[in-house]
Length: 73
Image (tube, rainbow, N blue to C red; front, side, top):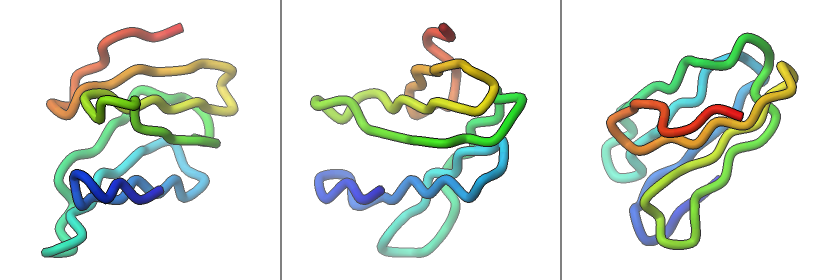
């Protein structure tokens, strides 16, 4: 997923980790590692302050960019 405002991508590669990449440098900025099964979808919040990930572990995670989990459900 591409976020033009932050110039970052959030690919989900059918593993349990979400990675936040810098478009300009290609560097991995953060990893988000709380899912216990494949990550199936990743989206930014409309205000771009949070990202959401859903997984095959039947959970949705809300993250900030720290990367601390804000809310699991």
